[in-house]
Image 1 (spheres, rainbow, N blue to C red):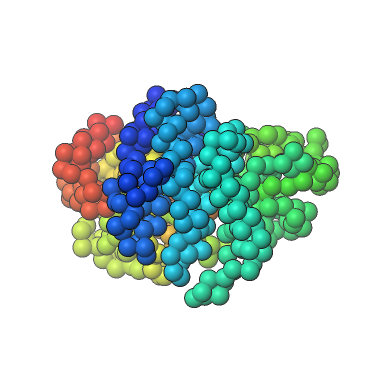
Image 2: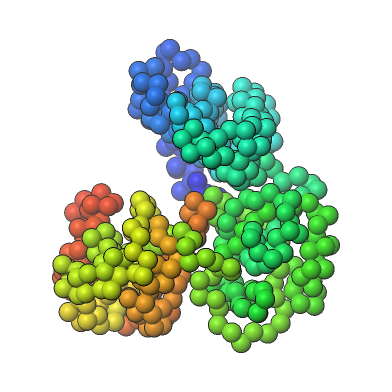
Length: 464
């Protein structure tokens, strides 16, 4: 859905995907008028796991189809798509979007998040009579989200923590922006916890987003952003009352110090247009390297790896220190040696290649990432502290010709995703056999690629 929301998938490819989804729904005699996604008969799956094996896949498939139909409304005239989506949405209402047992509320929030990505409010607005049963269930769910979860009445059974903040963020995306509201992208003093946040304290937090091809500059007490190809600014988006705009214009010095523009910003959920204040003055500073204002060293961020650090055993050397068994090199580790959290996996647009002459790998090429090259790169994404990212960069080599560039790849679960690469493309140099063997092994283990897929991927890198 992210690729559809951010328009990274073409019409033909999307139509093929939706047709395949429509063909893979299943009906069951005991559940007439309902279609489920996947190969599990809901009447035969134990109730405590039914939400994961039956309902969540159905939510995802239906949300994807709704999103596609919002983009291309004429597709709802295709009988197979119309029938499957109608019965699939009816099936979605079977549990009223709740889970089973202690994680019931978390499953509900996950379902609401999925439908927010599927632009359910927009879909119901465009096709109000398409499935009244589903529309009524969604309206009831949104009301529950707003009155019970967002108010803080529902708490985690184990930790006692409120679900209110998570609920408000999802609610902000579930609801359509009202005529008297607008979206605001902030990146400096207006952000949560910063000096001027009080001005938008009544706004509804929608999440972290990135602004591409802009760079942030340190102006002293506050930052400013200006257009810079290849750079990225990370900020927050709020739903605010339009009546706040004149006050914000005065605060920002709109027209003299800053100019307000409507710009596209992107999260891992969607691409939207929001107001943003752009600095009008000249700058002779370098862009802020961490691409975010007012950061804390203990903030958790995502670090995306694509070379030898696909191996957790090798990555541990950068965090904990010690000698790497693979290449025999010793590492000092990070000052904060806290172990990373559970890694995730992604395929990122852009291409890995091998360059420079690395003493760590028999003076052969090391892996670099070119975000502008055509292709896709397999990456393992570690949740680590921001301070650890800086220490890893120092160990990797912080010069512009090595890994001095901290590149923001986007947002994942409301945290920025960073990788390390060189500022400019490096001279190509083929890698050492041990290096390639290590990467190949991790592609099999982490991404479940077969031998042919691994060979095809690596040959594509070597020929880059």
